[in-house]
Image (cartoon, rainbow, N blue to C red; front, side, top):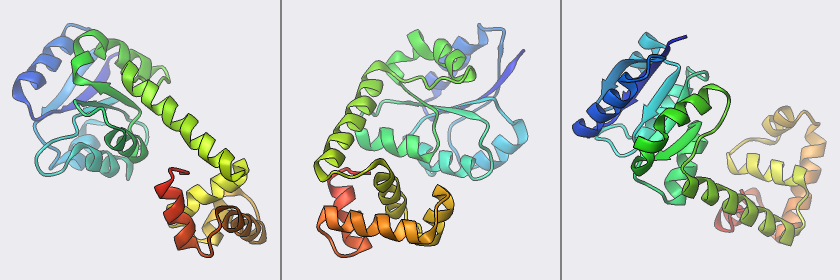
Length: 210
């Protein structure tokens, strides 16, 4: 089976290098290689790719915003970020936007083919340093939650509150009653020593509870 791939990369030499690398594999077909994401919605809709390789720092629409645009109408395409950014802000913003994998450009020659194979079989490929960052962040988040003795469900409610969801929306998302959500919310306020949703969300974001 031949898998369709789209590439978004504003560096011409790197764009050509990635195309050459993938061109040596019979199972991949580059349907398009673009220097920017100005037409990303039309291009993805037209080519219906299996895999999208996405740079972050591009002129106009950046890669993270492009991922959000894609996810608004396409949930099936597997998206791997190809970037030089190895800081937590870029990594988590990309993953929250809907990226399935995150590969540093320095690892492209050694890991790109394997990463595409992995993502097509249900994996979530990441450069080793990125995978370690994600694990460390999750562990730290859990430690902070444990300090406040938040239950798993309270953590879920707090996460949804931080996204701006109403009590009714949270109840629907979690499959519980509105009264149950209100009870969890009250418990969250008590444990965080706050008096409102705004204060709870602010504290959660500042202390990386969500």
